[in-house]
Length: 157
Image 1 (tube, rainbow, N blue to C red):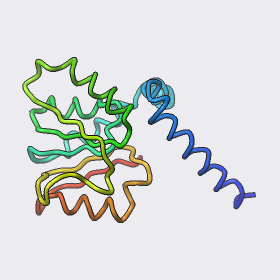
Image 2 (cartoon, rainbow, N blue to C red; image 1 turned 90 degrees about the horizontal axis):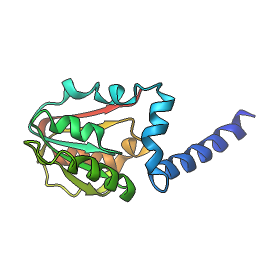
Image 3 (cartoon, helix red, strand yellow; image 1 turned 90 degrees about the vertical axis):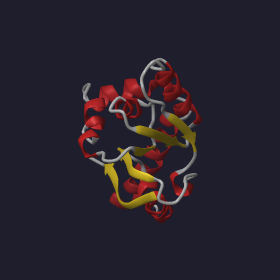
Image 4 (cartoon, rainbow, N blue to C red; image 1 turned 135 degrees about the horizontal axis):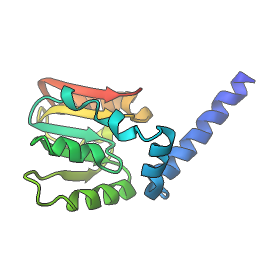
């Protein structure tokens, strides 16, 4: 049964996440708050003390909570997400804070092909990423765009 269950569960989760990040992105905050008993944003922000440098990239920023939190520290942060719906949600969230002393940039794209210059970033962060984070193309791209000694943080728990 285990051999049948694993592919079925993988298929189900893949479809669920696809819906959650795309056509049903509007319920993402509700779902994450529900499954975490209200702690989701606290869990995401646990990486803040580990972020070093002034040029930071957040991969898979979702609805933009961490983008906003990083920006509030005075760091120049760029967010990359492949979901057009998440880009819209995060963009709306960031536009509400336009009077802040920082400028966040949102880019729609894939981590496997980062549209950034070589060695241009001090830190890359991804919280609760999907399987793209361990794709060899993502790993290669992250090391390409990080400055020597830069940090690549991803929180999987």
